[in-house]
Image 1 (cartoon, one colour):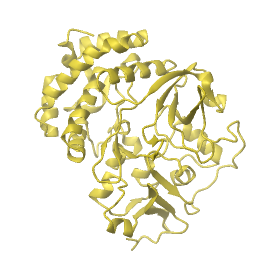
Image 2 (cartoon, one colour):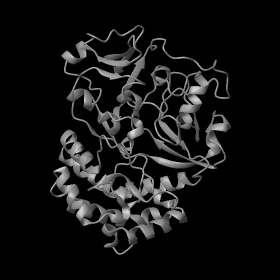
Image 3 (cartoon, helix red, strand yellow):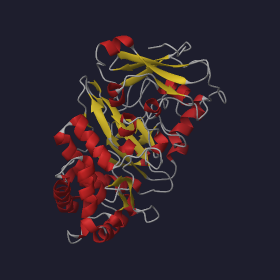
Image 4 (cartoon, one colour):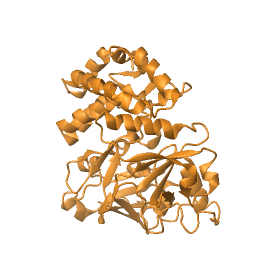
Length: 410
């Protein structure tokens, strides 16, 4: 497997559930390669690393940065957590290999990256002590919000001690969307009331977030906490988001690139092919909820597969469900196309029929509309906790979207 790839030492060892599955190393030209472990391949990729490797176990090469499957493990460039971590560690923000090595013991899922990448990276400064000591931010959570992996202790959330994994994600909303925690909590409660698989979650006062530099927290008064489904009492659960499964770079999570596009039609077919017909119907119900809740941010990284030790993944529980139409300055469009349509105002039954045809799911239209009926009926269970801006926006949304208007309003 290493022929022609003259990997330099030391390299990063990649493990899943503690099993070595390959290594990441730089060659003499600066490119980074993921080379699958020969013994792991001979044993049939048990445990699996991800869907793309099962389909094609070739060496992955990135001429710049790192292979996209691994890049999707990291906070995205310009993410406040990535900026903070890189500054804290003295790493250039664009140096994904060095950041991956630094965060490798507490990445999403059950993958671990062990070792140090060969010395191509350059420190921009020496790391300096911060108010985060002795508990340091050494975990990776992707996304645009500031997301902290934390432990729950006596009614407060704190950064995990060294060597410990947090079992809660605490999201800090930032200055632009100070009421985001309330909108997200109401959206997630609505999803659960509609029958979707949603982890435990709650709104918490920002004062209950302990051990974090106030400069990271900013001025919002509340945060949103959701239980991690990739961390259990009995250990980690491996996962990959859909950008990883399709080996699409984080920057293309909205599929705006002209070179390769996949919409909800393609994702629905992907779920059916890999997880089976029941999961396909469940995923279609989730897409219906995205439409019903006016969520314009359900991109490729907001859906995940979970892997045990076999080759049949399952859908992860729901996460990052937000009624983005609550903010009128955000464009009222889907993150990905449905039946070739992205603007909510253009979603009609014809789009659903195209979805059914392209996903090879003939019953998709009837399943989708039945799901919307359940979602419509469940709204009163969440409406009382929704901020006024969210209730008002959803009233307009259900009146203005063709496939929702038939229900007579919300």
